[in-house]
Amino acid sequence: MRLLLAEDEKELSNALVAIFKHNNYSVDPVYDGLEALEYLETQNYDGVILDIMMPKMDGITVLKTIRQKGNMVPVIMLTAKSEIDDRVLGLDCGANDYLTKPFAAKELLARIRAMTRKNDTGDSILSCGNITLNRATYELSSPAGVFRLANKEYQMMELLLANPKHLISTERFMEKIWGFDSESEINVVWVYISYLRKKLTALKANVRIKATRNLGYSLEEYHD
Image 1 (cartoon, rainbow, N blue to C red):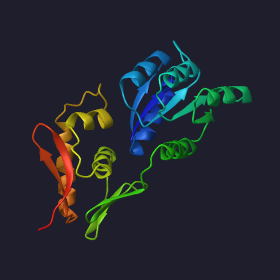
Image 2: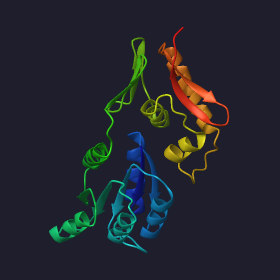
Image 3: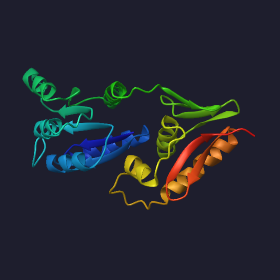
């Protein structure tokens, strides 16, 4: 799952990025409203954490702009303001939730889960063949065993299991998990596919990640 974090306090931003990555989120940090708007207009996110008081453009203006353009990505507003009028304004402009600084990281994570869950019609358990992926624990399992997947592995497996038999291009993996402006080379996708294939083999899975030349990858069930 990919998040955009728009927060101009660098120390807080760095801490939140570390927390998000530890909890298996991909995150793009930006530090002013104009940059946040540019990212939201050119890239796809599963959720946004948007500070209200930012340089160049405030968070309310960013929110109003994307909502007017039909972008309904879930948004949590962060602010040092606690007055009721500010909270009402944020919600009336299209925010999904509102959190006042200072806040506990656990509460922010819980609110992100709730916000993105409302936007996700899928289940907490994804399965194909004899394997299952638990979205709450990040565990990939079969009758033969279980692995707790790390950040990128989990996100790739989630994407494959949510779209069984559908081709997912290398570019789609890069966009969804690493981001367009990532410094990672595109062959990093193949590296992580290789990691996942080894885990599926160890789990004696009856599904495999099939590569279709120049098109992408798909999760296919097979029988010996």
